Image (tube, rainbow, N blue to C red; front, side, top):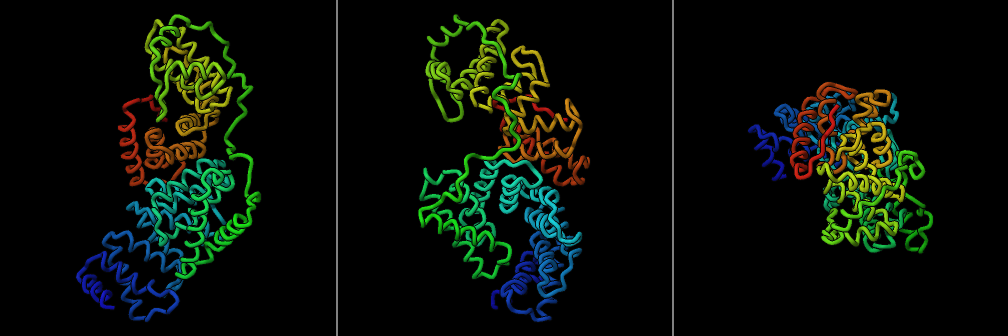
Length: 466
């Protein structure tokens, strides 16, 4: 109580942080006990005073008392009013609250689940690095709610959320995220390679759920996940995890590509002279953190290794694309790109698509072929390129909703690959194209996109904006 009285002294002097902390102590310290009316009146006044000074945390908790009915009558409109006030100043947690309110508990329209609204709110929060929003977006990709199923990407989002939480058991998302990572590990066989890691994650999840039970934290929202975690642990202890085994990752945005006509590319005459020069020089090929000699890569490529085919194609095309006298090497590179894709290296389709999009290396521009290659690749930069097709109505019927989904998927990935998509999203939010106008979020995306673009200047590609 001494601490509370000290907070009240600061609060009465107009300190918004103290006003918020004092109000929270009064309202949330013991949720099982009713609040004294005089103390409740003081808490509501403090929430209002702090919120009026632009203190985002106070806006969130002010809205929360009207959602939960803690000391006051439940009032959906008042809750949303304060959540929206916090969203206007881009408070990350505001989008989490709005995502749940409109997406999963839509009180204004009969309580149905509205995944479209949920995605729009959680997406904004995820872009602001709010950990709960990131894992909720992960669930939407995992189960195909509003967006196409992409479980490998969902796992990336779970890991990103877990990194932000950083082992904090007090975080409401800690247990859910740890369960998802563990379950993913057991479903896809990763636990066989790292058994101790995934068992630890599962144990952490159970401990987190039990901590929330003891803490009285709205157990109805996590009991199904808690039961799932306990069931998986029983399966593991019994030495039987076959229940969780599945054969492959699910990605619904793939198209059949191994026999696709666009990958038919005649084998050219090998540029023997240039290849012999390269074999003598035997330069290092560096891709990500992997370094190996050109001769090793070429030998592996000739033996049918798709990754090596891609490495050789990328190295040769990059080396010769600005040399007008090296058409044979360009043709050789294109052949190896096509072959790498046929042998299973789908990410090579993005590089090949970019070549046909921009006419790199003197190759004739073919936007239709590029579109199909981007569909095959389905990696992050390809998502951004596909979004432009739909936003422009090029080769496909114009559809801003599909464009938004592609841009969002790209933007949620690695930022140095997605600056074009982030800037396209900035325009959509600035002008109200498919989404509601949100100039503050548009400005945030614009700054984020420019920052990401600077990081990518070492190896720039033409960015396409619609």
